[in-house]
Image 1 (cartoon, rainbow, N blue to C red):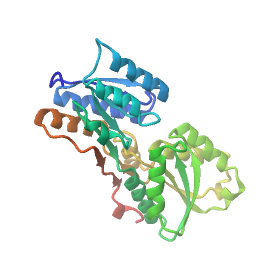
Image 2: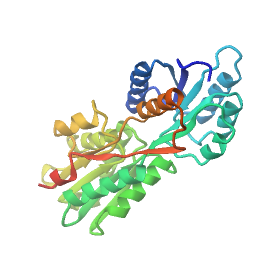
Image 3: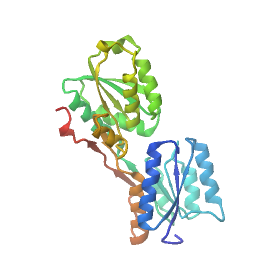
Image 4: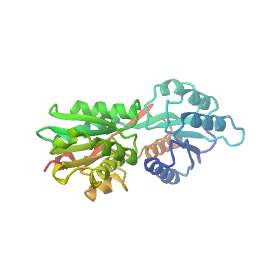
Length: 298
């Protein structure tokens, strides 16, 4: 590593994502604390574009960073990771478990590790929140991110592991977006089956989809007032200025608060380069219920 004042390229998925903006700001804050220089870039949700951007930087003779920190858009980007390690560049993956880190570390001359939320535990917590809100069972409208995404699958698996068998789940695709969630829930509300419910919970895999569902239920003319079910809303991620604030303001009943991954990754990187000793190949950050589980359902 050329200098203790590291130059870090931060490659994130999409600039229009509030979550990604928060992760970029957390990275800048942590980098400033440790005396690092960080440059955020965005892949516009395109895995091929992200791969091309990173390969150009790796192959550059004049603008090569000391470390690449990234949240992969699609795959874990193993080929790009291999090229970075060959060039002596550090490689830090956030928000994705990848299976190649241990192999790369055998030949790497710079830090290589991954940091991600324990997404299965996130789902388990949400399942427990559902049990607290529906102690006698009931109906849950479950809003998911994109099909096949590992975070989606892990959060769903955890939720199904802990939720009561008396709770019925109906899944809809919200694509992580508030507007999409609003549209799919509004369409669902036109189905006859939705009008037979008297109480339910909307559980979303992020807070923005939960807010989109809330907007759909508040649209005038979608259902007669006498047929509108009593609804509670829970989400995930718990960003300070969004999910946590929405819970505090009563717009959401609960969220699952996940720690900043880029901030944690910067701290681990600083510890490794300043004090020696390699980080764990994969660090799992623990989520927590917000508010605490014992305060729900009362």
